[in-house]
Length: 204
Image (tube, rainbow, N blue to C red; front, side, top):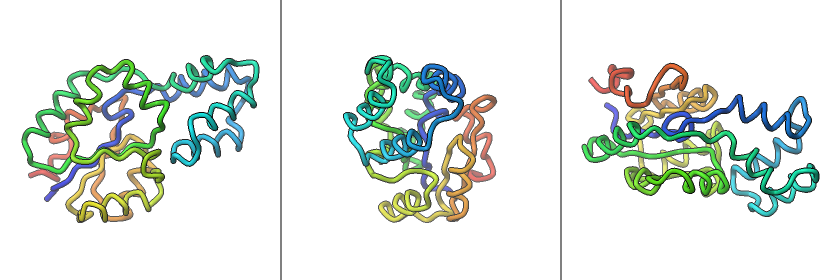
């Protein structure tokens, strides 16, 4: 029986444009692929191992032809709209008190601050979770096993009583290896609000 539901944020609640953002970055930076240094810096930033200033300094130095404002525009281009019906779904789920609700997101300070700037109900959204784990605050990231072990251990959760919803296959695969139930949601064809219909076998 499921007692805890762990949700990802991007492409579960807030829509992302991963393909468009990647194409924009490669075009603006005149690259065919991200360099190893860019991937390393991005990962360190996502884990909160470097500051906003250090992160932006890297890009300012690497791509001096772009202003900080332009780099921020490129960095935040992945973030799109947050459909209100998903907030309503979460609100009802929270008010039912049927499950412990946890958010577990790979993200960073600049993205969260940008979301706050255009999603007026972000604080309300956050209030519906019992725990709100952001990778840059806990210095762990998916799909590393230690982030799932951290959430399980911190909250005395049993893996077989926990469901994890995420759009990235490597993230759900990693959780499954620890015995956690998963829904690898497809944002192109599925919506989190159909959770109890889509995963009916877990809740019956």
